[in-house]
Length: 407
Image (cartoon, rainbow, N blue to C red; front, side):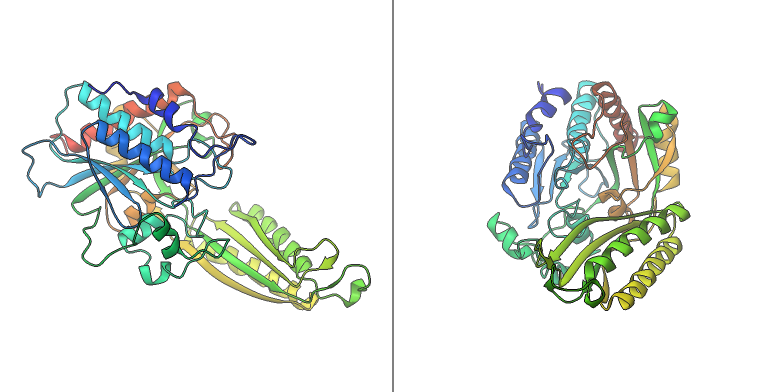
């Protein structure tokens, strides 16, 4: 009998990678805090007698395979991720992993015997906080991103992805290596809601219908470095002005269209207080209701940025670093999962590993747990324990539905 329950697991995981100053999390992939989180996962899985498999990226899947099951039986996979954004919240990702292990405990306590293997996954670099591509672990796992592309990635300190993996005794995708997703017939991810839809509906749990298309785009503005005091305003070629107007334009375009546009990361060179910068690189996160809306939003923001650059005497290059199309989760699967609990089916504007697996052809669903503040990617991210436990119940019921005789 497993003594550890949701609350004790949560208590053990909570300190890993947490900043004493802000209370936020810095669990960037292939770093010490994230390594500790992965070790925590392996220990919890092995304590439950689960078979842990990993690939050369650090993706993990722990399997419950009851004796006597046909090896060819399609499996049910659940789970989420353990990494965080910079100074992120406790719940985004880890809630899905802890809840998955707790759901297995609950099923066992009910005496449930699955007709299909059940796996709990922990994907790496879901946030893209280190190497810039969201859901990189699941993208490489499904082939949505190739290793030839990924191996050229560098983090903010110039560390290449293969070197980051090697420092963790990981080798990247290897030839002939068995895929962790082999035999997976469906995937269910539980996640804290990153908004207030469930708050407004006054319900603890919801089911996802779709993920908005979204992309990350790098805007490189080049100008001329010069003295902040001696250079007349009219003589400057200042890329910061070009960037500033672009940030305002993105805000206005997104607001008037009811879409999303955020410049949340900026790199300035030479980054001196008394110098006109020579180069500004800024990253745009854009999201929209459809692919056409996303393309139109990017086109108009880029056009206004180019027009401003021409007036400022600067230059602009726009590069799409990561773009994900709209994901519509299997509607029949969502309806089956939502029906027993009467849970609402709602869209999400946030990206998830579930979206990548769905796009690869695996029938996929998502459960959301109410977030009373609606705040996410912040230390203020929260979910009440009672709602988390309701999520565990909902996930256990979903796994029983999918891995039992009724499927």
